Image (cartoon, rainbow, N blue to C red):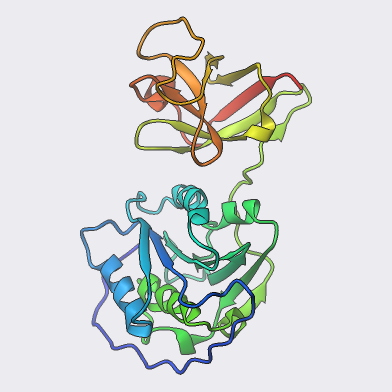
Length: 291
């Protein structure tokens, strides 16, 4: 979350020791940015300018700045869906931060072959679920922050400078202390009920109205039936325009399809499945399939 800031203080010069602590730290890796800042204000540009002031050769890539304000769960999903598209060693800066200026910790995560920088508010929860091997650092070394640090813009003053020095080869252990209790959202893993059914949930609704669940291919055996609210879905397609084996007609026919993020999505022909289902994020989805 962003409020108004005052002044444009210069960045204090940084004296770097390029010391890599892992084999995944390549020379000048790309830095991605994900936020709820939109494109109508100076926030994204200020973060990029801070990065380039520290590393003029930095390669900065936008994932999205259209996350709805303060929507941590949407940011967590978007980051999960996009981070592995980048080369090993990439640094992902994610800033959806309603707790900026409070006691919430700024953190650096080293997970799998990537680095993640942002607030400790659950935004990296799905990364923790996906990557079995991860280390989290509380960013405490103010030597590497932009000074003075604004109470309302840690994206520019903490997260962007940390990403920049990481791209220059600084060791994560020089930036803060390791911690073992990061904030986490509800886990991605569906729940197996005593009846044998799988209880999943809608974890994201995209701009087309597709309802993305937390059900993965390993959870699924055909033939299967999905239940959400009062609706039962038995049709599963390979892609959105696939006619499949269905004989039912009607543009509002609901079906399941495997999305590009690896999760089962609920969709509708030329319509919004979310509107047809009156679905919301977090809504339970029950899967019945043969073992």
